[in-house]
Image (cartoon, rainbow, N blue to C red; front, side, top):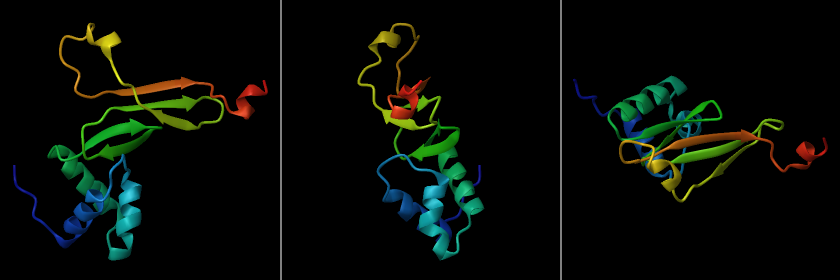
Length: 123
């Protein structure tokens, strides 16, 4: 496999991603680099390249692709009435580990229901 050459645009995007400590989207990166002549298609190509190289990890959140520099676990609750998405963390997967023939290194959990928002409680 050919190695990708380092360009000015890749250097700019790499520096922007290095500043991020949480999950991020292609749009997040684009917002920080677009004023430097980098288009959204270039951002998507770069993120795909980084993902293939194992330098970032991707997850699906609210039907959108998000990324992380570390292999993290991603959990969210989506309200079926309001569409709001709430992220949460799980401390342990002991309840499922015994059912899996291997070691869990990361996970993604999507939970749907009705939130405690006043709009949801009016019915």
